[in-house]
Image 1 (tube, helix red, strand yellow):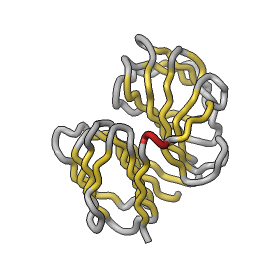
Image 2 (cartoon, helix red, strand yellow):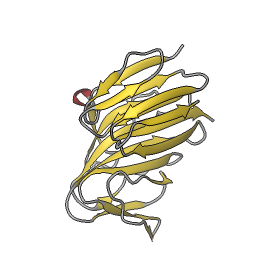
Image 3 (spheres, one colour):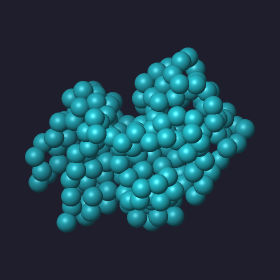
Image 4 (cartoon, one colour):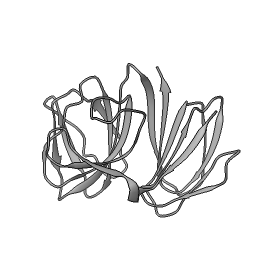
Length: 192
């Protein structure tokens, strides 16, 4: 039976990075408590200075800038395009990665998942018009990047999410229609 949870930004747990260079607010994860015991994890990180990323061998990462002027990433010596707000970029979590800030500190949004355990899709919606989305993913996560995100799911009351709040729907079966009104990120996760 599917379960719906609302995660409020004010309640996110802050934890140190694996490399000790900063801290992350954990939005949600599928299980475990440490930084190597989850199948997937979603978080927000503040980056105050250019530097090295933590290694997550065996995981895939998808990162997006939420606030600030942006960054480039050097992944195994290859420079990425300029990553600006709401532009998702995927890379192997075990790669040697360094971040180069374009102009001052940023806040970013991260999905880290095990491709051996999950298939994942992440997409951003601008929020100019309502988005009607069909999904058959087992877990659906909607992350708000605006002050007043409206989420409608058949069989559930309409939900309003504030900035950085999220909605998580687990054990979803069959085809589901979501109506999203406002800037947000949709993450779909299905067991591999």
